[in-house]
Length: 290
View 1: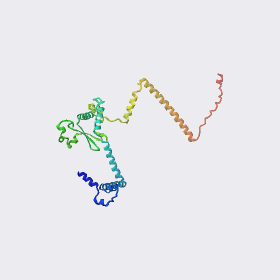
View 2 (view 1 turned 60 degrees about the vertical axis):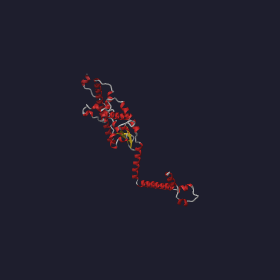
View 3 (view 1 turned 120 degrees about the vertical axis):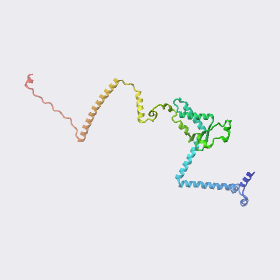
View 4 (view 1 turned 90 degrees about the vertical axis):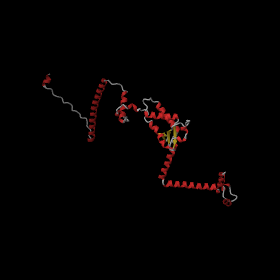
């Protein structure tokens, strides 16, 4: 009753305005002159002025406007990619399947323990999801909400806010669950196997470029046929002979290059010399007697 009276009072025109308005005014004019029309027209003018000020301010201060626009875009992206509880359960099942493909002797104890804990809480119905807009939190409760227990149904015995940080299991941001991803790092490496080794051998360091090249060379050599001592001696002998022949040929080529260089620099070309015919020698008396 009161609401209908307020609505009629708001939409109706005053007596003075009704007397001032022409009797033959159209319905649109009467609506514009009403309180509701005046209120909407004032609101539209305010929004128009605010938009004009935003455009003018962005034109005068482009750096400030770009920073605000980037922050708004980043916040919108975070809200759009904020993961929900279904994505967390899907991620837990996927990681459990990945660990199930490995034998227990090579699984990482940290990864396996964390995933087993999450799977157990999920099966018991104790996982809770809290969305904060840009980020999401996953924590555990003491009881299943469907349990018919007084402790589970009483609101006064719910989790207090001061204990929430001790129950957080994972943080979701930008479409990822960061704690679970960190726990699954090197999930196929069991650190328990290397506890008995010395510290120098237990520490693992990524190989460098030379180490990778050396490993590739040894792998290629492992596929080559075995070499006997006789074959090695023959190869060494042939290599020595080839090396000596190569040295001789290199010396000859260097000498020829040197001669050609001298000819070019001096501008003379050596002509082949004609050897004189040998003169006939006179025979001695002893040679004629013989």
